[in-house]
Length: 56
Image (cartoon, rainbow, N blue to C red; front, side):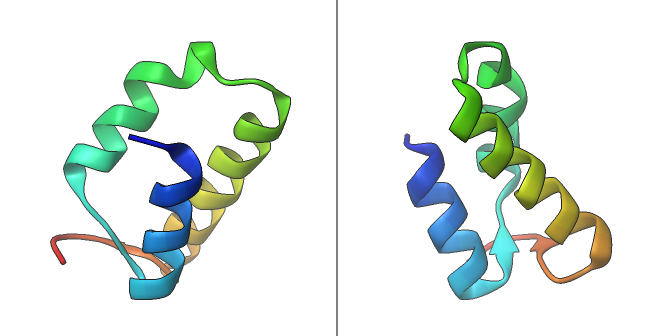
């Protein structure tokens, strides 16, 4: 699983799955600086309601 693919799918479909969230949470300590920024952007979009948690 790739963080970039997760981000692009989530933004495109405006939905992120719980499996993808689990991947983010479980691997965040291995992310580099750009991946941390991308995960923070995803968090912001989820918090604002732009992306919802569900299934595609």
